[in-house]
Length: 56
Image 1 (cartoon, helix red, strand yellow):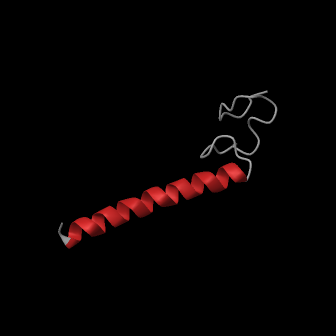
Image 2: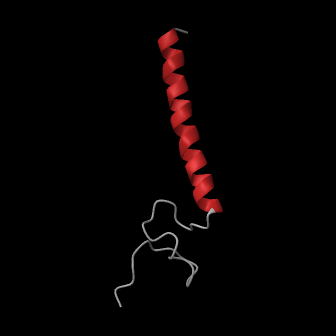
Image 3: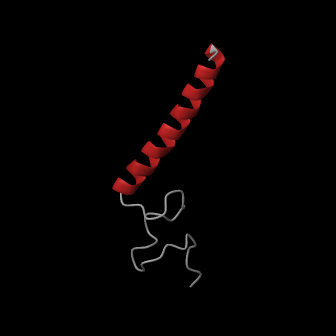
């Protein structure tokens, strides 16, 4: 394996690791839908998270 291959693999592993850590942290903070702008409020009144604010 060439050194550039190792660098590319390391970068990919770091990106995936950062994404996994972000999801774990968000789930521990109580977010139902990670990435949803309303993730802290949606899902509390219902079991589903539509990620859309009610238009009432």
